[in-house]
Structures are given as C-alpha cells and as structure tokens.
Amino acid sequence: MKRKYWLPVSAAILLVLQMASVHAKETKPDVKANTKDEFAAVADHVRQQMGPGGRFDSVNKDDQSTVNRDLSNMQSLYDKFGTVDAMDQPSKVELYNNQSEVNAILTRHDQDREVCEQIKPMGSNIPKTVCRTQRQIDDENGKAQRYMQDVSQKPQTRGGN
Image (cartoon, one colour):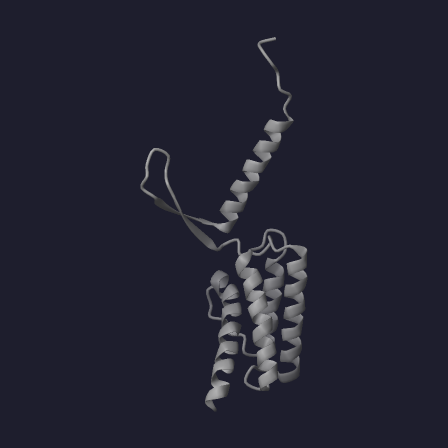
C-alpha cells in the first residue's frame, strides 16, 4: 500500500476500533467493527446506551440526532462496501469524519468517563487530586440544585413569632 494511503486507512481503522471499544469496555470481548455486521452491532449498542439509564443518556436531543445521522451515514458506507478494506479513499475519509464526530460527542457525554481535578481541602493549602465519574458529578450537581430550589421555596420567617 502506498504511503499516502496508509495514514488515512490506519486512522479509519483506529477510529472503528475506538468506537468498538465502547462496546468492548462493558462486555469485555475484543470487538472489531471491520465489517457491515460488526458495525451494525456496535451502532445498535451506541443507540441503546443513549437511552434512559445508559452510559450516554446525557446526550442532548441535537447531539443524539447528529450521532444517529453519522451512524446512518457510516452504515450506508458499510452497506455499499461491506468492509473498511473495500472502501475507496473518499469513503474512508467520510467514515473517518463521521466517526470523529460521534466519538467527540460520546466522549463528552460518557457517564463512565473519569474526571480528575485538583482541590484544596478546607484548612489546607496542599492540593489533593480527586477523581469522580461524570455520572457522580452530574448527580452531585443535581442534588445541589434541588437543595437550593428547596431552600429558596421555603417561606422565610422573621424573629421568633
């Protein structure tokens, strides 16, 4: 294979494998989406995980429609060519672009993604690294917002009467 084709082909294969790793992370087996059928299974899994209680349930409606559109575009490429190896160069570039967009959206909304930050504990100037999943952060933010709403809705009484 000529060198100028090697980079886009390897990038496309890498992104297919990254997308497949979403499925592999939860079920453990090594899943490779190099064929039409393998991609269909990965796409179905991603769509399922965007549902309520799924790993990507925090994806908003606009981003969900973008993910679904890109998955459909990728599926049509697999329908036309069958495998990544059989795709022509423009199709591989299109596949790469669609996968990049899907991966960016899902990574941003991955509820199992670990987020670490440096905080200074009360009474200390020595920073401490605290890591939590995006799901934990979202839950804590939701609880704090509900608490603030509850406090603001309670009637305020003045004095002891």
